[in-house]
Each structure stands twice: as structure tokens, then as C-alpha cells.
Image (cartoon, rainbow, N blue to C red; front, top):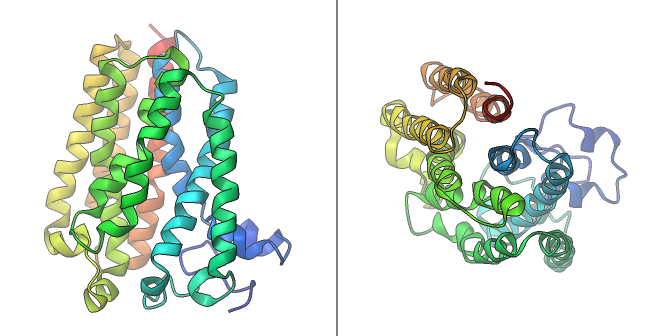
Length: 304
């Protein structure tokens, strides 16, 4: 591989491949800057909870800070994941061109890059409230164990849900310096959202995963996936409704959340688990779901 090789699940016209200088391109790909959907999925729960904690408009400065943090920490998580999975990634068609298994970035270089990203993330974390700082350090264990889960359980998506939605707690704590029932309910519901969308994503790799002995919810559920997605996404909708009730959201919140529910139903009804391109499209559409929920949060505080 050269630094010009496009990784399978990156968009053909992604900005990294088109515009980034050649010498930094492998590191940007290691941080998944060519595939920003993961950053959005990490960021939305943060922004949801910032809006949930607000009395009116959400704190724009806090949203920007969490936006930077999401880019850096998603990059750090992907770098760590690729270090752990470097041998597995080389055997999977979709991941074999990632920078470490392809040789574009050495293991030593990857560790140095990981350390730099973690340092930036630490600086951002230490600028937050005491409660948010404590929560940030509490997430380290979950982040550390996630890449290993696919080796021991068919449900690594549960651990991913615990990790990727930690921002539902962090954003609220960063604004109010405490936690109450609302962000906890939001967090619990969002875990099921992640289990759902990452099961769809995992169907792209199920053949390779079965051959090399890696586990996933896609392999576990197989053709029953749509049936279980109704349950996972239903739990997310229950979490969103419960969050709105305990936080006294206006009627506008519930109307818009109903639209978010329709989006999740559309995902299930149009899913073809044997069509990799369709799975990727539906997975990426969760960025739009996140936006709908964010608008609901803001409207729930601002209208009515």
C-alpha cells in the first residue's frame, strides 16, 4: 500500500485522499479522518446531553470543545483498536488496507501518534468540571477492553455502546457538574441504539469474521437481525421518551423524537443484511438520526 490507497469503507471523494499532504495521510487515516461517521456517532450523545442540561440554547463553546474532543478521542480509540487488531485487520477484506496492517504506519509510529492524541484529549478533559473529569477517567477501563471483546463474546457491540455513549453523561456533567436521572436514561437508551447500528455495520464483515474466528452480534443474530433491531431501537425510543418526561421537555420534543423513531424504523424496513453497500449506507444514516434527536433536545428546551 501507498499513502494514496483508499480504504474500503471511506467515501471515494473523501477529503483526506483528495487534499491531505502525503506525509500525514496515513496518520489521518489511522485516526479515521477519512471516515468521519464514527466521530459523529461519538459526538451526538455529547451534544444531546449538553442541550439536555441547558436552560435554553445549548452552550456553543462547550459544544465546540466536545467537538474537538470527539475528533481526538475517536482518533485515539481507532489508533488503539488498530494496534490491537493489526493481525486480524490484515485478514479482513474491508480492513486490510488500514495503515498498520498495510505497513504505511509502523507499530512504533502508531504508539507515538496514540500518545499525542491522548495528551490533547487529557488537556481538554482537565478543562471541564470535576464531575466530568471523574467520569472521563472512569471510562478508561471500558475503552481499554473494547478491542478484545470480539475475541471472547458475540456481543462486543454492548461494550461499544457503553463507550461510545459515555458523552451522554459527560456533556451533562460538564454543564451542571452533576448527574441526575435524565442523562442516565439517555445513556441507557443510547447503548441500545449503538448495539443496533453496529450490528448493521458488522454484517459487512460476517463472512471474514466467521473464517478467522472473530465474534459479533451480526454472526449471532444472522437472519433474525431485523427482529432484534426492533427491540434495540425500541429500547432507544423508550430511553428518549423517558428522558423527555423526567426532564420536563415540551411537546415539541416528543413530536420531533417521533420523527427520529420513524428514521430508525426506515433503517430496519430497508435493511438487506447481505448487501454490504446497503448496510454501510444505513449505518452512516445514524448521523441524521443524531441530528434529529439534537433538534428535539433544543426544541424541547426552547419551545413551549
